[in-house]
Length: 171
Length: 290
Ligand code: SF4
Ligand code: SF4
Image (cartoon, rainbow over all chains, first blue to last red; front, side):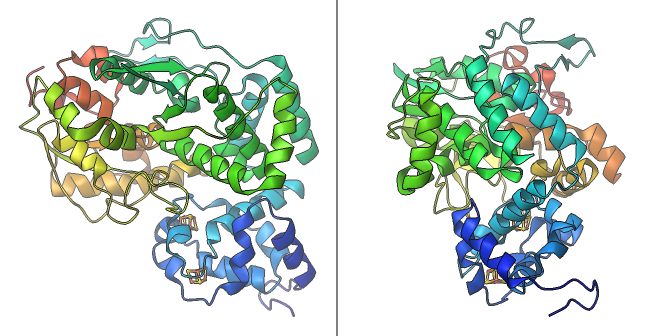
């Protein structure tokens, strides 16, 4: 089978692999999707960005996974989880979308720059960003110390080592 | 005094200081002692898009640090609440996840029993502490205010994992606001997402999403929007960005529930970090005596 718009070939083996090896246990039900479109009708990103979760599910079930891995579609979900809550078949498209993101990362997809910044901060200090100075109404900026908030205790070097080796395997 | 562990997540500790200030000020007044989970890391939420296993590991590691302190854990962030709850759920039902993560924890001399309870600020205040206790502590009732609440997504869905409130008709945050004397409204977009998780992927589009709710509420006419999550707060409070990205004249006070609670308990606005909110909160505070 071929997608006549993109000329991509279907790969059903890849679909089985995705289902069996996904670290998101909920995606095993994607094959029960009966295309009722309840997910899409309430989708936050459908309203704003034209993400159609039922189409993502359909493409996966047709084995057109490469096509999705290369598309921006999987990076526009806001994770509002309405489709997870409301899907009558337990197919929960959001888990499929996140699963495809994980697969795209492994396949060396180009990641959004801000996401990469977050990851490097995580590896350095365990948090997604450093302590920021924030503006008061009069535009003076303040930090934790100035606001009398307790000094943060950051995770140990051991932890950083564990996380780093875990993420090195991914990237 | 009831004591419980508090896990703040990244956003509050590194930038949303007004949520931290207002929770630290108000809880002791209600007889609650908070003990910080030290050496905590990100809950794993943002790693979910990159590697789900690493994300679950981070969540469980934080839970194991909390378990050393208390049987009950409070987190004020919606995103963290879901990450921690989902990881705990998986720890309990998935043998393979449990054994892989347990062995990583051992490298840091950590051990996790998996017996603690995770609360979000909303269900802790509403269910565990109770509305009566809160309204009895009010010294400065907020009678003149008509407010909208934004419950957010991750404390409601999926209801098979998180159960802070009814997934389709959440009322707890409204009832908490009403306990302070203010009025709340129902509005069509109440269940809509703030767009926050898109911030690190597609920043402009994420503010386009948050602008819809702000503009809807400006049309309806309320004194302010009450939120209970640092990510949602940032998305709605940054109204200079909303005006730039989506046009319109966004100018709606946005406050954390704990800031509102603090005002009703008699604290001064600056003590609660209201001078850190970027939205025009003086429009709201000028309607009450504080
Ligand atoms: S994923 Fe669920 S809600 Fe969406 S079309 Fe399929 S069955 Fe319907
Ligand atoms: S979680 Fe994503 S795909 Fe599902 S309804 Fe929300 S935005 Fe749409």
